[in-house]
Amino acid sequence: MLQNRVNPFGEIIKTRHRGSWLGNRGVIHNNTQEIVRQFKVKAWITCVLEFRGRHREVMQPNHWTELFFLDEATAFAAGHRPCFQCRYADHQRFKLFWLKGNPGYQFNIKTAVTEIDNILHQERITADKTKVYYHESLDALPDGTFVSYQNNPYLIKEKQLHLWTPAGYEKAVTFPVLDKIAVLTPKSFVNMFAVGYVPQMMA
Image 1 (cartoon, rainbow, N blue to C red):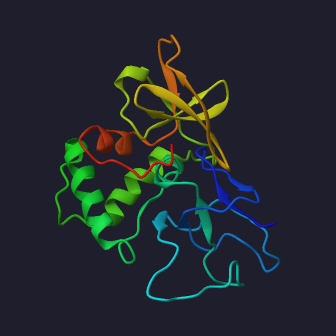
Image 2 (image 1 turned 90 degrees about the vertical axis):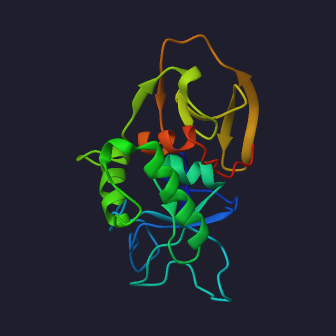
């Protein structure tokens, strides 16, 4: 069993359950298929599992490390965005909604996605390689956002919290009475959801 599945905290874990999306952070494994770093590049992307009949052997030496996600909402929570190549239409939609949701950066459609990646990198991981959190009220968060509640990752959907597990979602609960809650999904992605980007969710 390989360590190649990503949870909403951005952690790379071992599980027998398969993912529905493929991810890339560069070459982060060694020659014995062990994860040795969290990332190699700032462009953390989410890809389709199949593209133009291409076939890859997982975790080959000196090739980028194949990571997997339960759904797109999980990938966004971990800090990944749609790939420009295998998900061109999704990437264009992502960029349009990201720009709409984050007008303060004064980017435009011609802005290189590397500029967005620089922002995302600050939003997902600290200098000491820990997950970035921010706090917000539950009622202010759109569907598709992940939060940490009782140290577990929960997806917000239709005014309920859906517990994430590697196998899928379990025991949805109504919003607890809290002032604010720790948000796992990077803030600019949350802003993007708020203006109309709906991530794929298995819940």
